[in-house]
Length: 128
View (cartoon, rainbow, N blue to C red):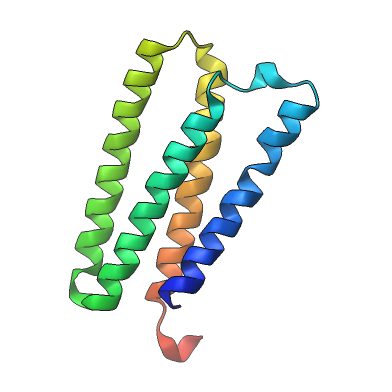
């Protein structure tokens, strides 16, 4: 898989991921969304976009460093999310259960799609 189709697939996935929160926001379920939900959404989606695009770029340039780039990108993403959670929870009054549900909705679905794109790029070309 080339870099551009992977990035376009990710952007389409982010749009698909935003459908449920937008529907909740306009149908009266705003209390199920944490305050500043879209800040969390765009931070994690942007972070995942940077990680995926950088790993795909490393794979395109030099296949030997793909695993190291994947591990480094995943570590940086987890640490950035932890720091974001700490800073966000200190600055905003939040319901911790709603925040955890919103955070894990965004984080796990982004992580799943990230793994899908990156593992799809590892497939042997003869098996496609």
